[in-house]
Amino acid sequence: METMTIQAPVTFTSGALRELKRLMDAPDFDATNFIRVGVKGGGCSGLSYVLGFDKQEADDDLFEFEGIQAIMKKAHGLYLAGMEIDFSEGLNARGFVFNNPNASSSCGCGTSFAV
Image (cartoon, rainbow, N blue to C red; front, top):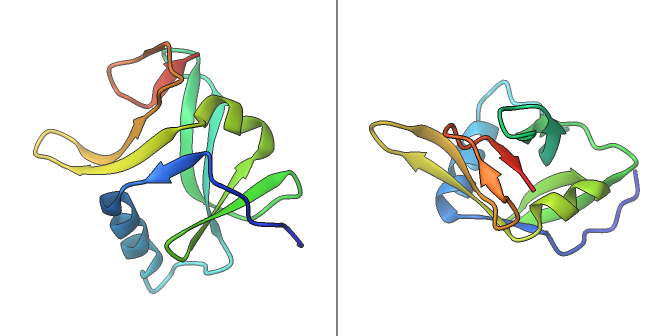
């Protein structure tokens, strides 16, 4: 699939990139997958974040972060422009954290938001 790499609407902190690389270095990781960033309907506030590994599709934009290739549906950039993805290793919460300046509200779990 021929896709041009464009400027990413989101950023990853060094901690998030370190965790993604750790996951991708697992022996059973499918190297044909990309990091998918996006949104889907649902969650307590209306929309939920998507972050996972997936195959590239025709309507995806392609981005690169320190050698890691990520994909996102073209339409999702509207909701995620300027978002920073971090990884927390705290005692109370361990996982990816989404800091989205476009969210007008979000839920307590931090994975659902409204615009």
